Length: 368
Image 1 (cartoon, rainbow, N blue to C red):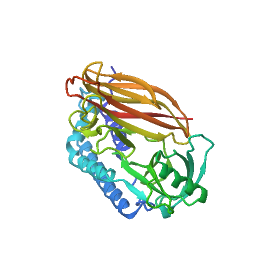
Image 2: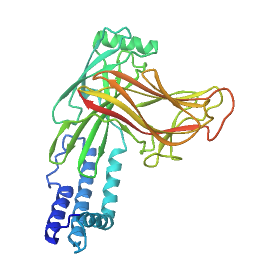
Image 3: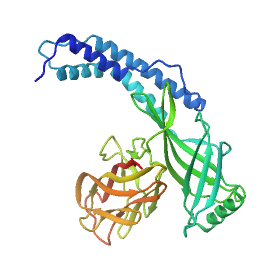
Image 4: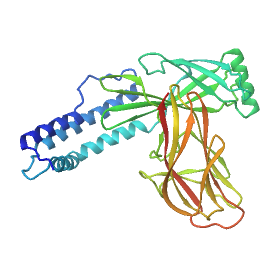
């Protein structure tokens, strides 16, 4: 076992604290964001500086003891910081949670969209989007594949918009921040409209294009996001509901945090369906899907079934505690995909809570 001197450890601890807690006191560089969001981030940065300052003050009061190993001292130091700067940390976490709550929109006037048909029989539309999004310091251009609507009226409106090149788009995005200063801006969806058919609603397409930035650093295109833990207490707009009763966010059980998704209350010979449709972002591939599940159903007959692009992957039933499962995939850049969870009941008998839960959905991304 390695022991070190008091002076060496004190120096090492100081370096560790500065590396973790110190963020350069740059002047605010979030001017590319809308004013209301910029103000929220500046409040979070003020709270961050207060937390860092208090953490340093607490650390300065802690001394290593002659009998302590390096790891023991580091743990004791961390416990002291957690106690002494806990109020400041909780306030910073509150500011970050306030920032993450709303979903924001970029108006159609700030977006240039060109659409063209693909040769596919299903007739999806390739959207070429060029915009500064109302927030990015430089213009960004990218492509998304817009699937063919199922409703006949929506299909006609989309066809006319493509032919006349007059489709308009509204993009939604969300924000989140970490304790250590990085912020993520994720484009969550695009909603098309055809001004010539204002009464016809075209389906919203989920997106997953992620940008990262921090104070003193430019905004850059980041690794695609793909994690859902439902801690907002609301179902993300990326998910769709079908079947006889809707899935909903529940606080009864959770694999992580306080919330999970619970199947809707259904009767015999019914089903509750949860859908997630997305496109693999450019320059990435999805190599796996993982999530946690819990069941309380009639064994073998009332089942939770999981599908990837219509292919049945597995099913679960009976009384089970939380179990994490993972499935390998090979979803390529630009490919549309659909994940589906179905709680399916047979024609008789109900056992347990007569429900299933899922939580902590993760899309495992890799670069191409």
